[in-house]
Image 1 (cartoon, rainbow, N blue to C red):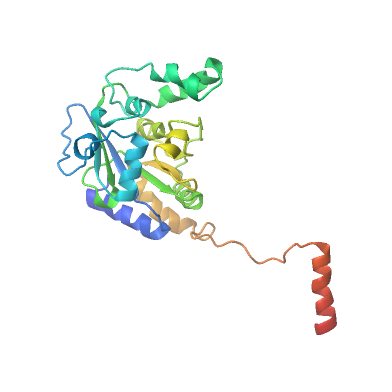
Image 2: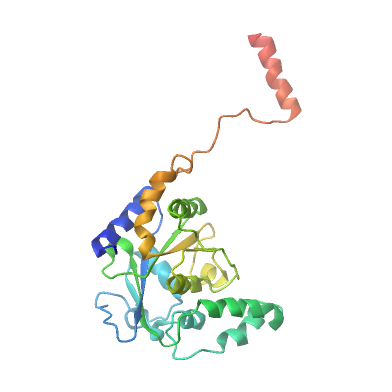
Length: 265
């Protein structure tokens, strides 16, 4: 059964509390052509802020400022992201033309990256607006949820999903356009673990200690029960195993046992 909006809000608040997340989990909806996108209280970057933004940048704004954003083609600065989201009218030659120049040695090195990127894209001109909102403020049904955190926090979420038999997809890291995993998660219905790429680290201002996980909303209510189920073996905060004698250099060991021999007997 699909979660209600109120239940989605509650899940967002619980996740921040249980894991101590530094930023908001955000919900994302790909509002299709002809769909009634109610965005009266959403910020539009170009209209309201006078700037165009990259998609990774918009997510960072939502998860750190707590704002609700609606992103259309007129708000978009990064065209790889815009095409991936289905906002562009047609397929662009942007990727085939520019990736060899900036990200790979030559076209041969680039070919696999282009293949992976195109597999992640939504259909051109299929989306009118992309809605982004912190989960605990959400007023729409998100297609996917994106959560940023420390590697141990994201590992805990993944472990919770695995408890229920929901396996994250194998990571295919291409070093750029990591935002494309978000429409790909929606497209495939699979959980994706994201290692930030170049654009996200620079334009999106993702911190060097952060990674993220993208979760189709149908799995959202599995996370908290899964965290509770696995905490006996995988607690968070982590309880490091400490019941052992340290292994130290020989001279230090001799010093320790000399003390015991001469003072304790």
